[in-house]
Length: 435
Ligand SMILES: [Fe+2]
Ligand SMILES: [Fe+2]
Image 1: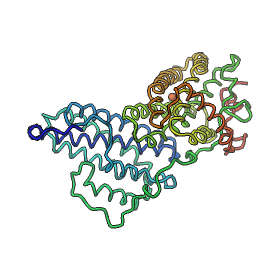
Image 2: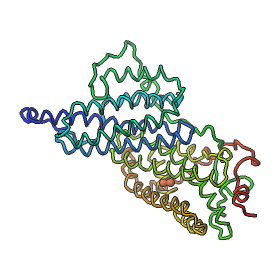
Image 3: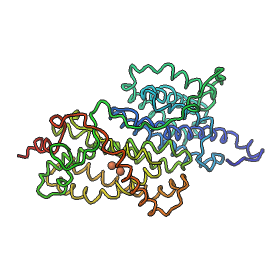
Image 4: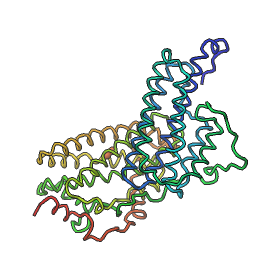
């Protein structure tokens, strides 16, 4: 941050004070993105995963607008860095992989977010509504978002006993006097133990999909066993109604992408904010793609409790460092998905199902952006991890590593359901009304 000379600082004191608060708010929103994203693979309920993805995206948006406004003011600072005093509270809030994910969620939404709302309200009270109208407008909108987010999350946290954990986090926040230091500071109790210093957060070895049944993969070749029969997707003989059902299962399983992409934020604390911003958008896009399937399948007669969730991709990718995970996602899975999806889209269009066409077209558009993000950010992510090989060479080596890891960590999840109960290619044909 630039240190203004004494007379200039005096002259601009009113602006500088509000800039100082905007800077803190930016850092808080950006840390929420970095750490609340760890909830995604830990909570099971798909609707809750989707909601957290949406909130993470909204926080990324808040941070971006705060930074944009902050940069109009001279002392905001040129870097995206977050101070340690804030960072350690968010690191604490992320908890450990062993903790109850709903208790962790209650910490974020029951302590840290209400404190952020209080900080925004404080900002409105202390700023000049006319002189600082541009900030006021943003802050009013962020308060509305935060209040809505509180209402949206409430049903998931009802009955969760998070008292002890919430008190623990409130103590850490109390030492700062709230996010803006706007309240009296309370020293940490003697013997206060920062749990993340003892047990830093690590990703769970498996992603939570309770209460749904699970399996290794939904892609296969056996209509008696698997729901998405690979050759059927591109076989001109396949009935378009069968293809539509299979592609909805495929879309719903982008839940995989949500779970493994969400792991990248916390492991890249040194990333520029713009990287996390695009990652947050990517995450939210995938959560909407998964919702396409999750919402459409029941309308076509599928009981979601018969659709097993595939865990292989998470299990394999979590063995790799974040830049390799991101490389596989953008440069392999997404970059190579276009030809098959194009064929699928053309077949689905035979059905005159405007909704399906719309969902698939937006999916395709989003995916093109994701590959662009990959080209933009993979080299930067590689640099964060000291990877110096040319991108192409690195991607090729990562593909080979993935194949080797798949042999060890793939195919390990037994079917939750017997073939007679789970959704399979054969059942899809029946549901589609194909004789
Ligand atoms: Fe997607
Ligand atoms: Fe994608």
